[in-house]
Length: 251
Image (cartoon, rainbow, N blue to C red; front, side, top):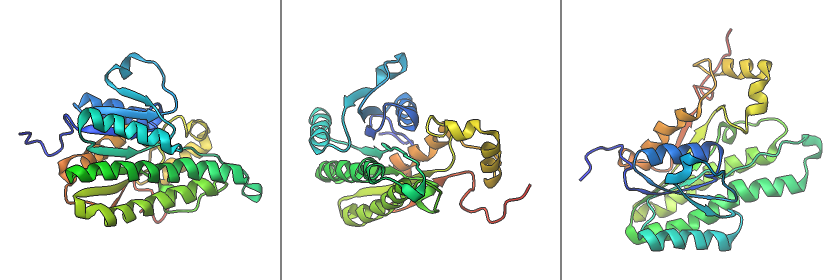
């Protein structure tokens, strides 16, 4: 028996969008702590660090791919303990002429993909009457940000999807929570981080006076994946340096 409340050792964890960025970082960090990680993504970088991971080519907008991936993992392991809905894209455009194509593509990946993957995994978790789903949302789920209506809408929708699934599936012992990053240094934010003015403005907006690093997400993710949060569901955990709670921006 493992007495460590925060242990993820031997847990079967599926991470969508685990081929790069935050998804890949979480996959590697959880793997170091003994979890069995299955990454679902459309492409993967071949690196030595990924040797411990199980990479599965999967398009999260393709229901056939999702069913095949989930059944392959379940057949081998007889369970899925944790699903991290991390796959996401952002397609900013001028809001005056935001295209339907960008709108649809963003919602397909960020929201519909998470719904489809969750539906399949939830029915497999139900067999063992336990499981944890973690949706990677964003502070964009709470505020309107400029020139990216699809991303804001998708993250707001994902937040509420998490609450709806928590309500429907709690009776089977399955928990669903949302983990919302603030401004984290990743490939997606590289452009704005490299802009000194934007970087400093956003750092000032936090209470801690800095951008987040990817490793700032590891602890909260372990918490939500482990038994340490076993009586927690339908919640939003924001890792944003105090961005959402900051009322006045001071020098």
